[in-house]
Length: 213
Image (tube, rainbow, N blue to C red):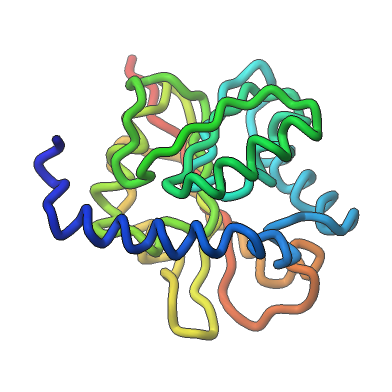
């Protein structure tokens, strides 16, 4: 067991897992979760296509939920692995991938402590999860270890009207020193991503892993 996985942490994880297992059935009803509207789907597809490297590339979708982004990524030609700590979310992701005839590897796994080989992925992508994890600086270091040399990380996050979330500068301030070419793209004004106008902070952070000479 990892030293950080205390009984208290594991209990909190189990409680959260039960909540998200319950949420799985209605998760896709949110416009930006299910991507059921063709316009919203097109907007996310465009955003990811422009942010990602050219193929071939292997992508890890952390906190993949019901797999909506994973399916978009696979449709763009990437080799995709999706992880989520909720078995119910993963079951729905697998069903959606099968229906879309996309070959995606899904695994039930704690996003904060991903049990995956180092330097396996060209891109790590995470949407609306980092803010909810303890010690995001430590989490980011674990995620960066999964990147191949020259790989990159994409974080879609926000600070919402509820008071939950992280401001973009809070994440930029704790990015590992090995990341370069850091950019922040404002997504709040792109209503087609969210199914309507939003009045809170939403953004995409991109960064590349420094290549060792």
